[in-house]
Length: 506
Ligand code: FAD
Image (cartoon, rainbow, N blue to C red; front, side, top):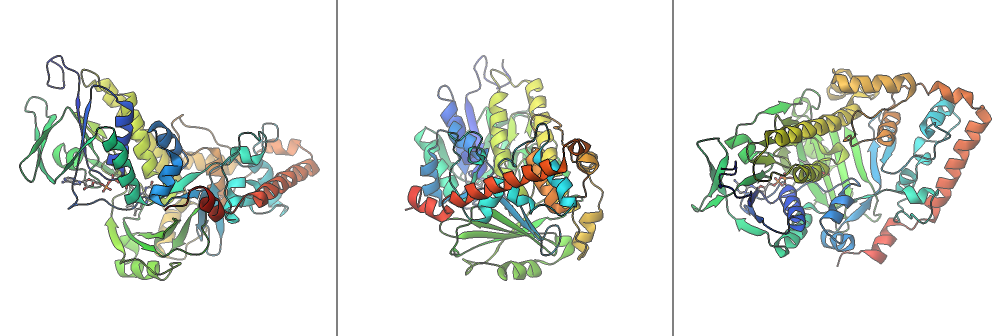
């Protein structure tokens, strides 16, 4: 008898609960890769709907699209997408400041020394430009330019340009639904009211819909959103709460009419008790205000959001409540929570869709065969927890490292205790701006940490090895990087022209 409850038969029936970005991303990839022997069904409820936000991505989304067999240009046109070279952070270090966390490389290493080390030394002498000038992604973003990376130009910064997308979340889910259904995924419309567990081991046997239908499965993928219908309500898996480190717990989202310039980056502007996002799409701009309910009212947040839009709002702001943190276990029994059902990290670095993608890939890597193996499940949960904590630390760093203390919110985050893992990392940076990977699954690498920590104003000593190099050589080296990047950025097409030529939505 196998653990699936079917004597000597392999796991066959996969039921995806929920049809938001998580549900349809899961359905699209599984239906592409599991070509034989599986029956994939997805249950969603039009009445409940989706969270309807989640429009900025990071470069790894391109790997997902490739694995899922999706044509990028087709996706861009279908979802009104634009290109994203990074995120601009405005007023985060202090009012009046701005920096870009770009996706690509920073300059060029000098021997074994990374360019930020040289820059830090010369910045202390006031002999360099803003750090954005030393990374093509950042400068191109500032100039509203975009073109695809060109691997035929090895050594040129253009070869290392990196990019992601902004897209309309509901159009993206609809696009993935079409792909999934074409590959045989069966969509079931209906509201799930309850689930029946097997008496012998507590595995979920079937879910029951409002009209009485029962949907039986071997494996249930809980993509039901923040509530966590199966993982939380049915299996009772608890939640590790990070609200003391990430005090924002609410958001208001409202699209507005497009502005003239199609910027190839997300903007995050710090506000009195949180921040505001701006995500440019072809047909509109997505905006939202993320805030702490302990440090201000919903009315103030709505007022500040609506007062800071580029164009006329389209509809009223939609409220969302969330709890930063993660499930103690994302995989429990025969239920795997993917998406918001598994945890929530505010969208400051656009990481949620990425966490959906890695969760699906991890599930595929540890997919149960004839039985659910506790070692596979434990490994899945270990990797998931590592990944969530890693991203969490990076997000906390944006709040902790700041000169701001102008409101109770900023005073709180600047002085709050932080996880040891982050404190140790910041100490290494302070001492000599060095970075070491804590694990190969780490999402944000040296370039990301360096850009954010320099941008946020962490006081850092440069690596003492820089002093081995004559100062004139360091200055000349940095000047060369800056000139090459400025030249390449100047020759790139405008982002809006590139879209008009290559992938304008109909
Ligand atoms: P949902 O979209 O909520 O989908 C849940 C699904 O479950 C729906 O189809 C619903 O109908 C179904 N369902 C629920 N209960 C039942 C039931 N009883 N019966 C039947 N069906 C049911 N991520 C990023 O990567 N980038 C961003 O820029 C970004 N911005 C964000 C901004 C905000 C304010 C928030 C809150 C999140 C943001 N995210 C972002 C996260 C992103 O929105 C989510 O990761 C993504 O949308 C996935 O959501 P989901 O599919 O898990 O849940």
